[in-house]
Image 1 (cartoon, rainbow, N blue to C red):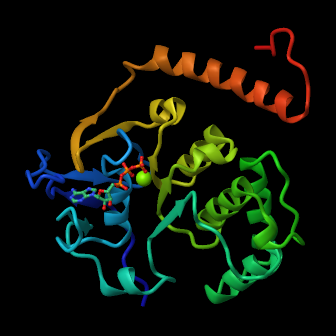
Image 2 (image 1 turned 90 degrees about the vertical axis):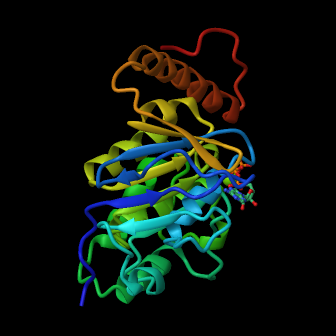
Length: 259
Ligand SMILES: Nc1ncnc2c1ncn2[C@@H]1O[C@H](COP(=O)(O)OP(=O)(O)OP(=O)(O)O)[C@@H](O)[C@H]1O
Ligand SMILES: [Mg+2]
C-alpha cells in the first residue's frame, strides 16, 4: 500500500545549542514552497534539514520534532527508501556504484517499477538543463564532476524518485543553474528547502529561515518587499556567470561582459 500524499510537513521547535527553547510555534511546509535556510557557519542549518530528513521525534541533538500531515509519519516513510518522501542532496553526495549514468538510472527506474521507457532520457535531459557541462548517458557515475552529480541527482529526485520534498544543502557552488532548478521544482509542485549562502537563491525563496546558535532565530516572509534586491541580484548573478564562463574558457576579460 502506498503511503498517503504529503499535504504538509511541520517542524516543531527544539532547543538552541545552549539549551534554550526555540521561539517559534511551528513551521509548516507545503507542496510548491521554496524556503531558504541562512545563517553563519556552524549555526545549525544542516542540522535543521537533517532533522527533516530523518523525521526527528525529539531524538536528535536539536530536540525538534517533524510531523507529516499533522501526525508522526508512517514507518515506511522513515525506513523504506522507495517510500521516503524527502530527498537530501549535499555537496558530498556522490554515487559510489561503478555504473554508467544510463545504467544507474535504469536500475533506479526498475527498482521503483516505473514502466516508462523515456524516463532515463528525460532525466538526463533535465539534468543537462541544470548544468553547463553536458552529461552523456555512457559516462561513468564516478567520473561525473560535482556539478554534474548534483544536477543528475536533483533530476533523479524529481522524475524517478518523485520525492515531494527536496532538501539541498549548499549545492549552489557546484556550477548548477540555480534559477532553472528553482523554476522546475516550482512547476513540478515540489517543496524545496535550500541551505544556502547565495543571495540570489535566498531572494528567490518565498520564506527565509535565519539560524543562530543552533536555533531558528527568525522566519522572514519578504512578500514582495525585496523585489528591488532580487532584480539587482539577478543582474549581478548574470554578470558573474558570464565572467565565470569567459574565465573558464581561458579568455582575457578587458571590457564589459554584456547585460
Ligand atoms: N540545536 C542544537 N543543539 C545541539 N547541537 C546542535 C544544534 N544545532 C546544531 N548543532 C550541532 O552543531 C554543529 C554545527 O551545526 P551545522 O553543521 O548544522 O551548522 P551549519 O550551519 O550547517 O554550518 P556550515 O555553514 O558550516 O555548513 C553540528 O555538529 C550540529 O550537530
Ligand atoms: Mg552545513
